[in-house]
Length: 261
Image (cartoon, rainbow, N blue to C red):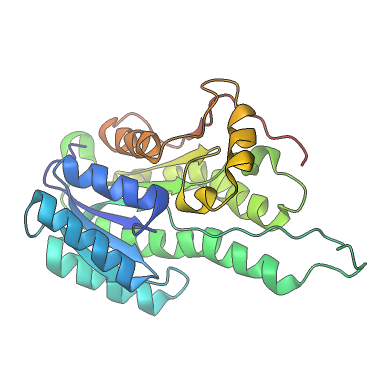
């Protein structure tokens, strides 16, 4: 699919990998809807994109992806501003680290596990199902394609570390969902892929001490540095333009394999 002129939705688009991807889409000529629970940050990113690329480039949409009503309202707002979207990039997510049995001998709180799975897995499915239902009604483009979506997993889906049960389960669920969803939506001409990033220089990562960041970067075989959000954005956009890429999960990690801890 040619990105130029298409309406795109980026969840988690107000910061980190999502913001980098929203910026790359705008640079490539897409009309971008910045979905985020942080309405203020989303508005700042959208305003910046409009200033850089012209009014009408971006719209901010406050959205809780776990809420069907919130997603429905955000999709309606995005459609009114940019027209029907053919591109959905699921980048919103949260993390936690809880040992099954803590140092105090108590079991990990179930609510923590449920919250991570609810946002990362169920939330991603929630917006994807609603996007797909709208996208399936659009006229087909070249090769019969109507739309494309992307999930953002993690290398933790394959080699999660101690305490990452909830995070790894949620990201592993996205990986496992990719192929059956691609097969399910093939009849509608909607492609589905997933990126599993490793260690990236996101705002959250930058809150760690520099010595910790350096140690993490040194654990990456090559290049021995943290990934750049722009590199994630470039791959995300490639999954849109390469029409034969479907039902696939791609690790983007510099050959990193995470140690147990």
